[in-house]
Image (cartoon, rainbow, N blue to C red; front, top):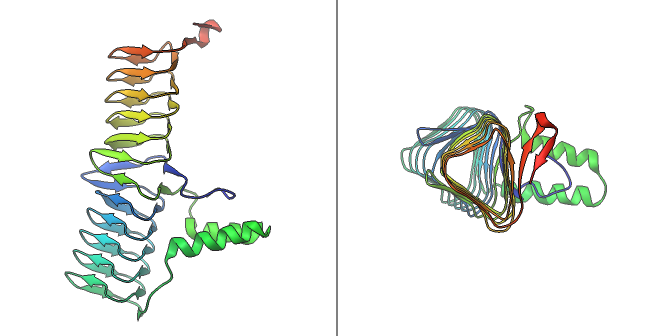
Length: 283
């Protein structure tokens, strides 16, 4: 996790993330900002959610799971290590914890729970609030080494980037709606339209939906978009081997000669076709 900026200032989908039968699956951590709705189930290493996050399926965390106050999980919560549940969390299925369970007041678990370690009933400090306040204070006073330690604790031991869903987002099989920028890694397979301030797609992705942004939209080599690509006031850049199974609408267009658009192209400004082999561009 990069220091010096808000960790929740953009939608970040790491390499290899997939949607499998209504589950959002990643090898790394999953961090969800408060007031968000995630209609999928979630599978990752550590799963961390802010206050009032709603999950539409199961949570499977290989390591720890931390759910802040008023979170709601429609299905089961399966945790490989320790679990931390704030007050008034609701779990619609079972809670199974291999390690210790730290649990707040008025937590509802519809189908019972089991923990192999210690069970402590109290109100844990809201996880995201605690981490980010401490992190920002350390950065402010110049304690970079200590701040890096906090960031590593939040991100886990593995080198994988976390999947980050910003505060107030709405993620479902129909759409990914965020009020921030969106960054998608390589080799991802996603379902739903992506709506963001700007969108940067990686290489060899497969998106079963459209892309729409206020600003720039960049689509990396070999990526396939099963829908339209639209920006209100930015540039659309399509790299080599990209295929858009829909229309493209933008202000400016930067198009590789080996990119394919099945639908119509509407560019209100400049249109540029890149021909790297020829060493020149056509405008």
